Each structure stands twice: as structure tokens, then as C-alpha cells.
Image 1: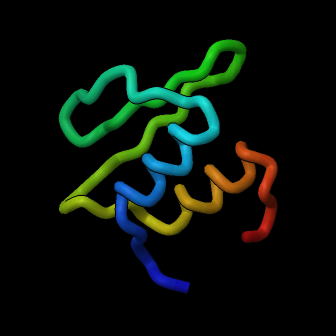
Image 2 (image 1 turned 30 degrees about the vertical axis):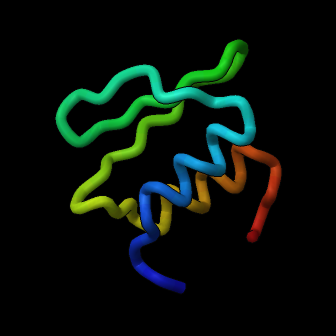
Length: 65
């Protein structure tokens, strides 16, 4: 498994699932969706640590993908 994944890939998945980027403060990108706890992704060099991809899979109900 790669240690980092492209931010644009995760952003696209979140937006397709109804999440929207509310704000960026420094390297932290905050995604929100009504009725859900916000998801905060620290982005460095256009990449996000693989653990955040697992978090997103879990939050979107896609388990171990």
C-alpha cells in the first residue's frame, strides 16, 4: 500500500459522495456534509497520508478498499 495518495483523488471521491470543501487553513482542508462530522485532511505537496484514505473509506461505508 502506498504511504501517500493524491489529494485530488480523495477530494473527487468526497465531492461525489456529497461532501464539499468548506475552508482551507494552512495545510488543513475541511470537508463538510449536513448531518456528518467534518473531515479534516492535512495536505502536503498535493498528497495525503494513506491513513486518511482509510478513514474516508470507512466514513463513506467502503470498509477495506
